[in-house]
Length: 119
Image (tube, rainbow, N blue to C red):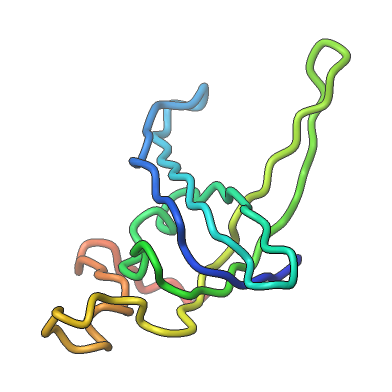
């Protein structure tokens, strides 16, 4: 697992589909720009519950935990940067926004999404 931080520059719409196993999947791409001497744009793929993080706002400074993997298809290799977690480093919200900072940073979880599993 790796970590980096930067500002959100682009957020793509959530995509969904049904896998071969019959389960529905969701994914969304989020792009950040690192704040280093030579800024770099990095596109992360967020899957499942990570797609709905409330602090996905343009300009928000976040830390991203991620994993990198590659797969081979017909003699060519394709890489994927899969987001494992996001952590807000500041609100990144519009100063005209009157909602509380806690409201803008906490993901909204419906009661039906909470389970009683011990892990």
